Amino acid sequence: MARTGAPPATTDGNAPLPDGPGRTPAPATDRGAHHGADRAPGPAAGPDPGPRPFAERLPRWLWVLPPLAVLGVAFLYPLALLVRQSFTPDGGGGPFAAYARVFSSTAFREALGTTVWLALGATAGCLVLGFALALVIAFVPFPGARAVARFVDVFLSFPSFLITLALLFVYGTTGLANGAWTELTGSEGPFRFLSTPWGVLLAEITYFTPFVMRPLLAAFSQLDTAQLEVAAGLGARPGRIIRRVILPEARPALAAGGSLVLVMCLNEFGIVLFTGAKDVTTLPMLVYGKAILESDYPAACVVAVVNIAISVGLFGLYRVVSKRAGA
Image (spheres, rainbow, N blue to C red):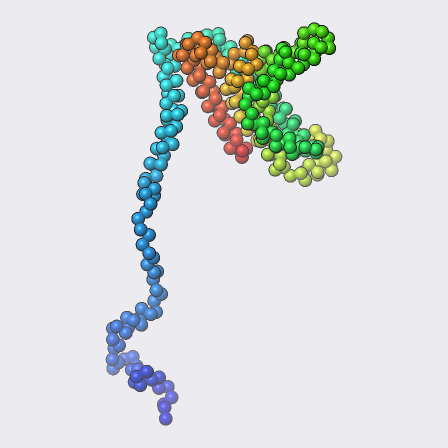
C-alpha cells in the first residue's frame, strides 16, 4: 500500500530525490532547458529590410538646394541686380548719389505722397463698403445670396485692368453715362472724373472691395446666430447688434483684409495706367516713367527699391495680423 505523502513517481518509475545532500543533480542540459522554458521568448528576428532607397540615403539639407536654386535664379538674382544698379549710377559719383538725386526731386516726393494717400483712401473705402456688403450677404435673406457670395470668389481672379475698362465704358468721355446725357440734353456729358485721382480711387475701391469681403464672409459664417437672436429678443436695435455682437467678431477679418488691400494698392499699376490719369503718378508709374520713357535706370531702380521696402514691411504687418486673426 502506498504511503501517504510519498512523492509522485516519474515517467521512468523512479521517485525524484528530495533536495538535500543526497540528491543527485539533474543534468545541466535539462536544467537549462527547464529554465529556458520559463523565460518569455525574445522577439523574433524580422526579415532583412535590405538597402534603403536612394532618396532616403541623401542628407536632408540636399533637398533644400533645388528650390533655393530656382528661387535664386528667378527672383534673388534679378533683385540683386536691381539693388546693385541703384548704387552704381551711370554718371559716376558715390554709391548713394542716385538716392540723393531721387529723394531730393519733387517728382519722387509727389509720387510717394500720391501713392500713400491713394492706398489709404482705397483701403478705408474697401473696409466700409466691404463690411456693408458682407453684412447684407450674410445676414439679410434674399434670393441669390449664395450665388452672389460665390461670385465674390470668382471676382478675385479678375485682372485689375478689366474693372478699369468696365468703368471706362460706363463713365468714360464717350461712355454710356455721357452718351445718355448728350442724347437727353444735347450738351457734353459731365462725367470726366475717371482721369482724375478720384477716378483712380473709385476704380481701386471697386476692384479691391471683394478682397475684404472674402475674409468677412468666412468670419460671419462662424458666428453663432443664437447671439443675434438673444440680442434681438432683448430689444437691441440692428445698429447696436452690429456694434456689440458682429463688429467684435469681424475685427480680425477686417484687419487682415485691410492690410492685404493696403499692400496691393501700393503696388497697383494697371488701374492707374488704364484710367489715363496723366496727373496721377504713383511709385510704380514713376518706375515705369524713369525706366521706359527717360531711360534713367539708376533712378528707376532707386524708386523700385523704395517701393519694395515699403511693400515688404507692410506685407510683414499683414502676416502678423493674419496670424493673430487665424486667417
